Length: 508
Image 1 (spheres, rainbow, N blue to C red):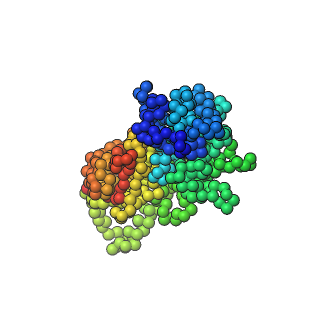
Image 2 (cartoon, rainbow, N blue to C red; image 1 turned 45 degrees about the horizontal axis):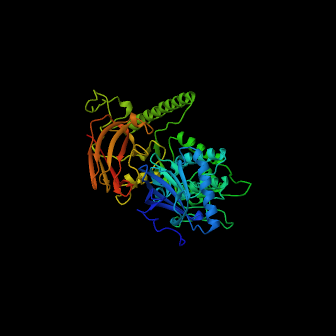
Image 3 (tube, rainbow, N blue to C red; image 1 turned 90 degrees about the vertical axis):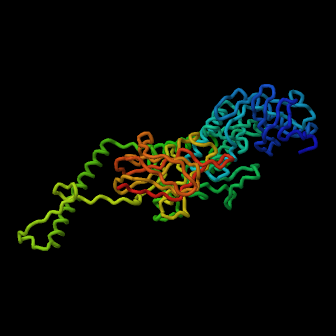
């Protein structure tokens, strides 16, 4: 800071002729010497977002740049959109700012409840589906502003916040004096890149965020080169938005929105998502199973043909099995089949003279498959699901970290187990260090059964260690869901749970 900058720019300090008390600093945009603050408006008794432009009044160039930023923000005050915080007021030295405060301009906007974008990506990159849903409202805001002839200045990550309902919003308006619409498009691409990789791909980003890697030609490395499971289209649009070339580069937010819409539509129609990485082997296929409640659309004629085919195949298989059984019995019979000796029928209990398979014994039963069940198509660590039933307590499946508890962003998350044949369970034992996690045990008629069509047969709050959950009486089922309704809260906005092992015990 220059010597003219006021020492009041600290939490608790008061600026703007004593009207705004600073509460917490959200970041800084060094390209325009702007500090971003949450403050309290003493006159209206409400929280606001301040973009504070610093500098010395004697520096004519800096003063002119600050004045241009304030003017552009004032023009944008007439633009309203959920993806942009509404500008309430602008101040300049002599009109709300004392000349001795070391402030060349100030943009006051409504405060955005939620969390900083930087906090969201602190735990690592987000899944593609989550990134598209977060970004769409901000992209729509930029597109609307450009149609109105305005530039928003959405090209710095600390200017962005995540609303309480899980959407990105430009919380600190105030574009740089020389910013153009192209900079907003680049900013949108860079934010998408940040969500997918945890790296910033434009100059002037926060020092705390790693810089995006570049190739030999200086171009930014595509996100799916860092994380191969990412959709090619989404990875491509992030990189092409950053390119200034006329060939191949994306120059409008509308083109980005089109790809985001396509990704969202594809996810909505997908009932079984199996992210595949080139580094994975076939043995890892079970790890990638993800069950959702979205049912794929299927032609009625196709369904009819499928059922006919299945019926014919089942009948043919049954015929072969019966024939083989007769041959085997005749081969191992004590008496030759032509001898006409007596036939002994051994009756099983309740068989009324007809043979029946023995009842399955009580005890542990292993599911044939397990996967992440998610109603929002944003599965948590889908490739780790099988670790919860691998009989190894040193491995685990863990949820994502949520800054807001359920059901803020989603109603819950779960693990759906599928058994080779219908089973009736007496209990489920969960080994977990996540004390306080609340779970419901539910039976389902199908992998993709909507949550409201599943039946709850047990509830529990997990302890640190093993928790045995006794289950209510239920009909045999092939699908059992462990549905997490409350995550363990470790403080500091960290809501996350971990399951190390699940033991399913069959009833007698």
